Length: 498
Image (cartoon, rainbow, N blue to C red; front, side, top):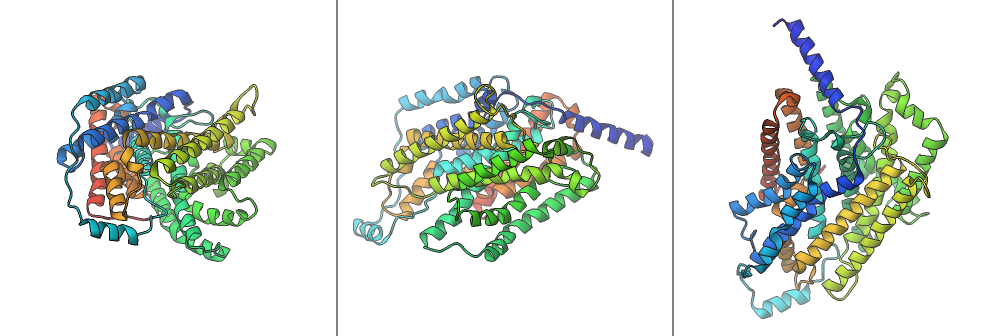
């Protein structure tokens, strides 16, 4: 075959791949909720095995295999083989739970005990950690990263339903909620430095200092964005231009968030609520879309210069910034130890607070989209408009509340007050999936590895021409590789901060 013929075939296949992910309209929010409910269902089974049988302690190769099957493979089959019957998969995951409860309960592994005098002395000298690690937050973030990483490769195969892929202009899809959830969860953990400063009695740093500190977080992400841009253009990789623009990508969006969040911290003095700031920003951006030519410009304008070519990434950034701020607000409520004399009382108050936030975001989303009594707006991930921001906030707050409720009911020791920090750390490890902890610990680094592996697969495998069996084989190997990298970093106690 001549070189010209090979180039023509490559160009034809590239166009076919771009068409495969273009002009899609998405699916129903209800179906997305059923599919993503697989993660809490899998955690229920994991928690039951751990609480009743101490199955994952010690963490044997069999325990690791079951951990992978429940918290990674179950999500993979939910968006592929069981995509049309997610409720059936949920039932399959929950069916063993009552059986395990009827089995004789195994005693937990014995651990060395300190003498009573030493234990009492240690407990009396320690003050409770005001910002303890919470297993349900780790589980939520880990599951979110797992489904996001799996979907970015699965979307290139025909076994992945087109209704789950990113929508062109208007509508909702699984991958649309995934990218927003990544930003929202980043906002949650970004609340930790704010809480630490409050606990230390520190005042808000000057704007210049905040901006310089934020740049240290931004620069690595912007460099990754430039590397991805160079790689995509240099390898003539298939790309969906209307997703972010010609040059913009998700790493640029994440990279520009820290300095803009630093700017919004100044506005916090006048509106002391990150949720309030998020809603104000979402309303202002939506007003600009509705009452100016901005919407038409983003959706239909010709790409004549650098600004025009990247208009989706530039203007959708305002929606992602609102999502990040909403995540920060939830983090301020969720991450602290909480009020109450006992762990049970603290957990009850936390569940009530999170349920209230969830109901509030759901009501706002309903008000923005309802055609009879609301604003009659449609969700657009491309614009990251007001309904999209409210949907992401409602979805993630509800998901986190669900994981918190699952932990409360099926792993009750997780929220009981411990005498020492050592005991608290032990309870956290016992209550947390090792796989999900590993994905959460190095989430952005694993996401980068997932992008590299996705590119490698697409450059070496004609993903549109493989059978469903071959596709599942590749996806299982990919998921296992990502899990191996994540757990390997965790085993060697390596944290990659970006």
